[in-house]
Length: 127
Image (cartoon, rainbow, N blue to C red):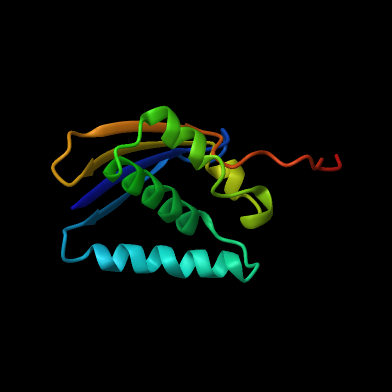
């Protein structure tokens, strides 16, 4: 069973929002098929949107918890999943902090917070 509740905070002008990914053992295939399609999109050089990025991060958290990963290791490895070059404009700014409340299988609830999971690029906006 996978139950991941994500709460997202972005720049001050972006409203905080929550997404829930909940799949019982029979439906997990749907979740991981979605992940595989998004990963294929990235392999083809396409950029992902906010919802696709959240699915990738949620999958990473779920797989890492299932594998017995420690919170710090999960946070550190999450920073390598996406870059500004692999997401659409505005995604990195929208996903400045993602808080996960995850229940995987019969393990206790884990709370993991990713801060700036998509490294800021070095571009400047002309003013």
